[in-house]
Length: 325
Image 1 (cartoon, rainbow, N blue to C red):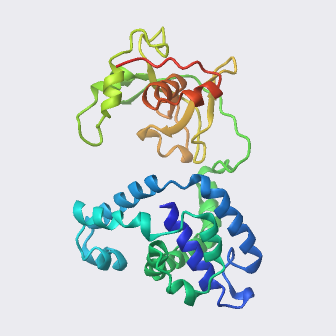
Image 2 (spheres, rainbow, N blue to C red; image 1 turned 90 degrees about the vertical axis):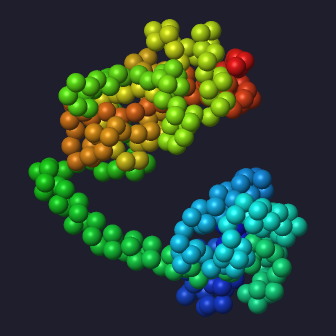
Image 3 (cartoon, rainbow, N blue to C red; image 1 turned 180 degrees about the horizontal axis):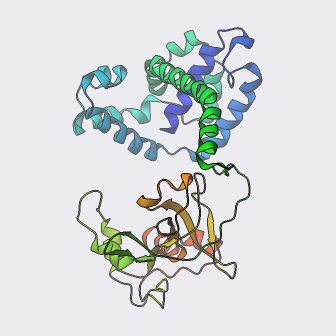
């Protein structure tokens, strides 16, 4: 929830400002104040009350599935331990008139406020931020402890990997240029089973079971039936390709990388590995080391038919060709 994140930043800055500047946590010193304000102003474009409300609802519903002892105390009090649709609707219904956090001038004014003044604020998100402050700080401290432990242990871990391999190896993707050459290639995950290199929209629809994890949205079901004359159909497959496999040697951090064919044309995005290649960082096996890419036709079909993002397509130089279900 973006608004709650902003509220926490405001409260955190006020709390840290009570300490001598040199004792404050990094990111909340006086030298950081200008950057915090600039970030909040810039992120105004990313704030959507409607989206915040939907995300808020999702978290409240999830809180309701937890044992009472694990639920955030502030929300337990605010909702009186009831996480029904009615109680959540009542709580969320007060948001529009109970906060000014979506106003950039109001946020800037809050950033200059003291802890005492903020604690008197009627703003709902500021109240929630104070209510969750100790729990968030405790979680933050645990993360710092874990990070410190990893900082000490990681060199020994890497040394053990090098010893196991008997040679040096490349690290996880770390913003350095990296190219992997490969072929589109299916594989046999186990005896008697062959995973074809391409999946299609028809195959996706066939997997629908109307419940997670095989719940296909109704709009996809509707548009998915109109594939024969769809411009995103691949001639060789006679269908809209969804994903494809390759034997590329990928590693953590490569997700989102562009996939190019031999002519340098963009054909998809790398995003995962098959189950049998989870251990790919420890060794490459030609028989089962496969990574998964989403096909560019699937991306364009989704943007066009499902999302209706015609302006985005036009900006990309693609002529929208939305079909009717």
